Length: 217
Image (tube, rainbow, N blue to C red; front, side):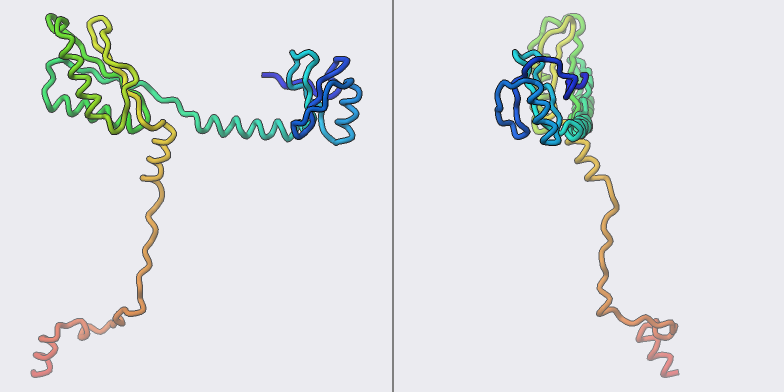
C-alpha cells in the first residue's frame, strides 16, 4: 500500500481538516491547511482521498510511519498460521491403534494445529455410516479438553471426515512450550551457616567404634 499524499503533494482547492487530536476543524482552503501545518511543525496528511472534499489530518508523519511499522512487525510476530494435520482411521480399528491415533491428535492439538480425522470405508462398510459417526464422536469426546469440533462428521466420497480445532492458538502453544522447556533452573542457595567444619584428617573420618578400638590398642 503506497504512502498517502502529504503537504505540497495534495493538489486540491480545499480539504476537510482534522486537527492533531482528532478535532474537526472544518472545510478550509488547502493553502490555509498547509500554513497551519507549518506553524504547528506538523505535516498535512491526506487520510481519505476519495471523500468530497478529501479529508486531511495534521500529524507528525514520520512518527506515524514509525509507529505503524512497529505495530505491523509485532502483528507479524504474533501471527502464526496453524497447520491441518490428518489422522486416518479404519472403521474396524483395535483399541491400541485407536489410542495411538488419539495420542497423535492430542499432540497436534496441544501444538496449536487443527486435526482432520478421516475414516476410510471399505466395501459394505459404506452402508454403516452411523458407525463412523460414533467413532468420530468418541474421538471428539476423548479430546474435548484440548479441542472443539470445527466441522461435524460428514461423508466425503468413500470417507467420513471431522475437523477438530485446538482450544488455544499456535502462538500461545509455542509460548507455553518455550516457558516449560527454556532456561536453566535457578540454582538453590545452600545454607552454610550451620555446616560441620571439613577436616583433611583421615582419623576424623573414622567411625567412633574404630577410634575407640585404636585408642585401646
